[in-house]
Amino acid sequence: MNNRSIKRWVFLSILLGVFLWLISNTQLWEIILSTLFPQETRVLHPRSLPVLVWEHVRLVVISSSITITVGVPLGIWVTRPSGRDFLPIVNDITSFGQTFPPVAVLALTVPMLGFGFLPTTVALFLYGLLPIVRNTIAGLRAVPPDILDAAYGLGMSRLHVLFRIEIPLAARVILAGVRTSVIINIGTAMIGAVIGAGGLGSPIIAGLVQDNIAYIIEGAVPAAMMAIIADQFWANIEETFAYSTISSNT
Amino acid sequence: MIRLQRVTKRYGDTIAVNELSLEVNQGEVCILIGPSGCGKTTTLRMINRLIEVTSGHIFVNGQETSQIKPEKLRQSIGYAIQSVGLFPHLTVAANIAVVPELLHWEKDRITRRIEELLALVNLNPREYAGKYPSQLSGGEAQRIGVARALAANPPILLMDEPFGAVDPLTRQKLQSQFISIQQKLKKTIILVTHDLNEAIRLADRIAIMESGKLVQYDTPQVILSRPANKFVHDFVGTDRALKRLSSISIEGFVKPAPSVMIDASNREIASVIGYRRYAWVVDKNGKLLGWLDRTNLNEATSVRETMVQGDIEEIAIPNNATLHEALARMLGQGFKSIPVVDEKGKFIGEVTLSDVEAATAEMES
Image (tube, rainbow over all chains, first blue to last red; front, side, top):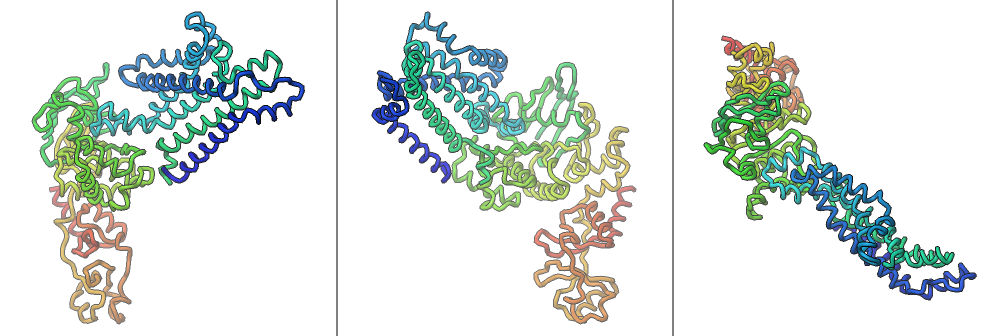
């Protein structure tokens, strides 16, 4: 780990500390929001902010974990000889998953899975799949053919080539896909509130219904901060672990 | 060592390689050459099973390759390609270590081997082991590619235009290095090229291919003097005599020549130079410094002042060069003779124009 990436991780830790301090200080929110919106009798959602953030984080972490564990291997599989025939169909399905509005997914899954956490996770999973699968495929395909030729020519097995050559070389592109997916996920997880999955969507929807801007800000600002922190986190992972032509020159 | 028996490769209706039979003996350099699309690369890649044959048999060390697991087969055959294909995320050392690691060598042994190989291809291990491929020049990358191919000391080496992607000067240097490495290691090598001069210079035997078929398989000398048919004749070209010079090393033509020390007295010079027009000047370690012209000698007071100093790299040729290079150097410099030095720059002797002419005349007869 070089100096620059240590600095980046320190910065991220500070950012995370500020975030945790902010969301645990409910009084501070109350003071600021009351000053900004003196006409409102209530400026904070009845459920406490740390709980809302926790629900949101849980939704995002669980659904994104599933998306990554399914998406990356899926992208790898369709670039292998055994799965190459499925490449077009996987491409189509993942594109469809993203063009299909998450709200519609909710509407369709609720009758089957009921209300709450489960159908929201399914919707988020489908919605986040595309960037990961797409980037995994693109990253693996961008590995220069002469490098693969050399790798096989030297006597590496398929698995060896995949884990020692292809994935390290494609890591940057794959991680960029993961990063996009997670950030989309943080925003999209708001809709979970519609069917009772909680999260930071709750104050926003309540704010919309009751015409209370303070509620909306209470939901939107922490979500935006979460997105920034997640973005930084994945950028750091990329910077620290993934091979890049630029950093190898320094 | 390597035997191809009626090997055919078909892609749908097109035949890439057609009933090709070829035998390469141990320690020989066989060069596959021919126009683009003649099937030379396909042939090469069938030997380590990167491409599977449609029909026919390939034997390596008496064992049929189709009976050996492709990975095992390839680990026992060195492989170097034009684009080199160094792994950009691994250091030079890690690139070279790939095959030894696949073969589960011990760490110490791998480290020693990496140093040995970098020294073999004339790169300083301390400087280069930790570099990344993006930090190498084209010629350096090619040499690392060859070092990687040699890593596990395979008896056989397959090379696909290994000197194709570098400038002419670097290519010449790499070829000289190839020759001296091969003299040390005595590998069985099959090399693909489309450069006839390269083939003549490096090959023990040349296999000329045309649209998937082997048209002639012979030593460079025979190919140049007795082309099997019109295709080979045309392929070899009208400057055959000149090309033949590329297949002859100057070693047999180097003659002792007068040389004087840089601090020699006038009398010593006179006795060395005799009736000749010139003498070569060396330092006390025998290193070539320049030459002395008889016409300037009379008014001279010391060798140091009279000596014509030149860029030794440009004037002298190494003792593993070919007659072709010697002739080119003479024509380029306007000399009738050129000095020959060993790899340390030590003066050995000279090659004269009349010797080159005599060699040409001998080949024609």
